[in-house]
Amino acid sequence: MAKTMGALCSVAALGLVLAACANEEDSQANGQADAQEEIQIEFWHSTAGNAGETLQALVDEFNDEHDGAIEILPLYQGNYADSIAKFISSVQTGDLPALYQANEAQVSYLIDSGLAVPAEELSERSGAYDFDNLLPAVRSYYTVDGTIHSMPAMVSQPTVFVNKDLLDEAGVELEQLQTVSGLLDATEAIHAATGIPGTTFHHNAWYVEIFNSALGNETCSPDNGVGAEPATEFNIANDELVAMLDRFGEFYATGALHNPGADGQAATGAFQTGNVATQLVTSSALSGVEEAAKDFEFVLSPWPQETEDAGAVIGGNSLWAIQEGHSEEVQNAAWEFMKFMGSDDVQERLFLETGYLPTTQRSIESLDGLNPRQETLLAQLRDTPETVVTAGCHTGALNTARAEYQLALANIAGGADAAQELATAEEAATRAIADYESRSGR
Image 1 (tube, helix red, strand yellow):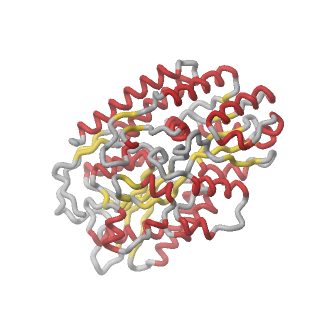
Image 2 (cartoon, helix red, strand yellow):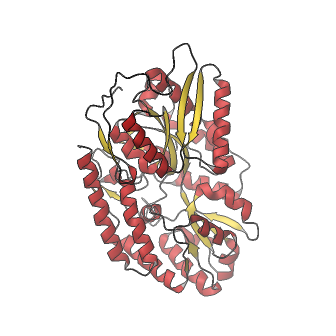
């Protein structure tokens, strides 16, 4: 679907405002090649470490299979925040990559801007992909207003890492962790029995959203922004979330909750060394922790669900084919790599090598010989209800809003009143949506 850019304006992550006015007839963009030549696709991504090595190996495999026709040129752009900032600057200069990896916070911006070709359109135009093969939780997250706009590539969910030895010492059953109320009670009981904090998580705004989803609440309204109407307000000062974070505030004061600040590695280090009983964390951290947590029985518990509609929201990243400045030939070549990354074989490999979750039904069915931790992750993914709650909040103002409630988390850990902090953050986050909608001319 060709789009003109004459009136295209959008608000981007980190509070940056995008005002892009590009000439559609300027077809000589970076990565575009003559029909007889190999098409080179510049691919911006934010995948580092062990997962980055696997991604590079997959790129090499794809390039070998398409030698002389398509070459993917991966370029690491730093973390997601750094990457989207560079992407926005490139929109203004007209120097966009043909293929872009984005995390969940950037989904709405990329849709609203019209910079990318919807994945379903690419599938119809240049080679079908079986979107019905996507797992319900994955399909739910990446479907906005009835359309899948990108290829889910390396996805994750929150989960609970557990030191089973400490639970046994405290007389806490593993099943107790499967509800929010049970997790809170277990955190307190473990500390009372052992003197060791019951749980830990670092101060990242993502936790506000996934605590909300565990309680069965939408983070933004209406319908978490995935319906026909865009989100207009945040819902983070609801009674259930206030009560949960109020209790966490009490736990910080007593030592029942370990406080790593904003340092995720500090939280993981405390868990790996047996200095905390559980960690609330992304599933993508599994492979690294498995290598280090050797001195105790390491098990997983599914993300808690307080209601039938509650569950774990999908995180991770997806791939977007950028249409501005790139011919259909280049877009179609990018789509070939997107299909490759979404294939059953690649999704199975990503799970086994990195801890990112498989996105397709058939990839899960083909996996065997898994350890109990891997089985727990797959069971959680399969069992996540396909609801508006688990679809997660979608708004182009998400990055700006997250800065507000991440600050609230830190303040609550420091002794501030949870109700007041969340009310202040909710008001500021809702204001960010209004600013976004106004500046994007919608």
